[in-house]
Length: 235
Image 1 (cartoon, helix red, strand yellow):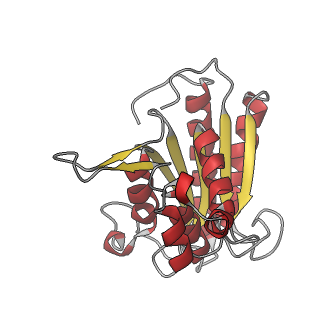
Image 2: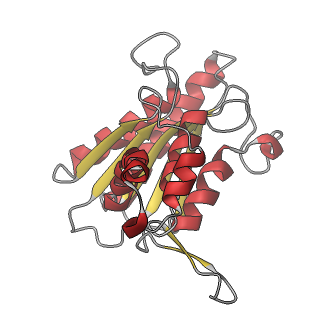
């Protein structure tokens, strides 16, 4: 959970919205891009020495996994053919970015109650046996284990057309965005998460404006807490 606040850190900033402009820049722009941009900009202001890797999976979607990818990824590296190694070049690069990051920041809109297919493709490319999770059928009682270093976190910055998707809300049972991100990432070792959301996008009235304002204030407070600019308290 980023307990060492003096060390230089690296953020991996991922955007997944099909809307390429931010809602604070263009009409009908992306709220999730707006939120992720605010988070990373504030972080860099407070910690200018920290590095940021940016990956836009909507503008440059990762290839979907296929039979060739599966065959290659489950073949030990020293036994892969040149064709198999070539098939994993993109996945290797995406996985290396994730492994190098101390904090993962994802701007992800809700599409049909779940995550965009481009982000799912990214997840499928980085959940890699032998790289981000281990498997040994002889290991009991649990043959799988996460391989990412402990203490890393993911921040989910999302936007929803309707309202009431938070836990206990009227539509909480239909929200599979956070689960679609946190379950596979927890599986590989990202065990801590924070979620901030904008709602009421389809309404476009004062409730949307208030939701954006609340989300931006929550982002500022979260960044201040994670960077040590504000006193820490339980999440």
